[in-house]
Image (cartoon, rainbow, N blue to C red; front, side):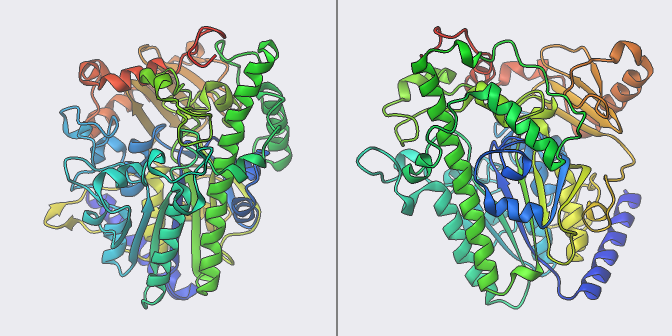
Length: 543
């Protein structure tokens, strides 16, 4: 323990020196999208209009590898605390499965970004989705945030009033004034006005619900994308992949991941089926577009307040695009009362369009293949981050806390409210962001566990198993980013070494064999897993 706290004392001193050399301590804006895939931004290969995020990307840095925990609540727990999700108490989801590592909300030993930064002189703000509280515990206003929207537990966990509570036009499309994305943005802007009047830096955690299902957007934004998806996911995936190579997001010799057997062949769908599927993606694109518009309003407000030049903005997604079919999941088809895009719809983009969103990677949300855990990372800080850089990065959400604490010159306490603080396992990404380093330096691998899925990343190697299988697969990501060729059979020593490290990490973090927890899993989450496997065309509830 002494070793870890010595490191963070050093980081704190380094950060304080950085602040003294560069001027006042920076404001921090941390933006999180919900269910946004690796290829869903223009700067990562998409055809969706995201000019504000693309501006930050082209004037800042993008990482080719930035890892999350594959699903929302565990990712947010790690992001907010710098701990692996089990250590923070959210090892499974926002459900209590009866063990400390699986209680479903952040424990007291895991300090949040807001708690640490507030104690180090920052004004702390959050607007949007929280999703790491339970039993009236670990609510944002209990965990260091001074300005919070929404302000009750149910709304805080979901991010904003439910779409079915939103006022609509005659056709059922939401009105702009009380639409979720706009509410989250508007409250953030109001809080920034208040924070600007205080003589200290601020930290804004801006957690959008977009583009998470159900697919609902403003009609004017859906209209922008009418006809844009008539080519289908197969053709558009090739187009995105080509653009990614041109941008340098993937290397020129990269290969696309193999297509899952249950992803539909667009050319074999009927005309009516294509129309229905294309409308889904039109709405999804509108939701991403609306998120980007919100980011533009935030940067405009920072500029008006004369705070922009001393603000670092970081943008990430909580996981890859999802495979679940909302119509099939938990009797979802019965909840559809109006067309997709309206507040009466109960639709998701499903596995077919998420296959496009996660280009060129394998897997989806809740999987531990790259498509589930590798998502966009953009950092922008004028005059500090070199414009237009793309780095491998190999960062992880556990790295955000040490990065921000070093940048802010913030001391990470050994104790907080008379409770011993957990050590931080991540590393600072400032050498990657500021010093032209290509990837983060670590002394140990990165680890994952999610509902029985397991993974280890160390250097070029990725070890992974997909529940209910216990068989390890091994991939060399320097040669095979698509995770197409399992080389475990020819590398027994590497499999043994990484699997041994995994089991030691699991023991240290309270991870248990998922077979011991499966009976405690909520029925809705069991249905969630089943919904990710598609039925042949013509047999599902959608058609």
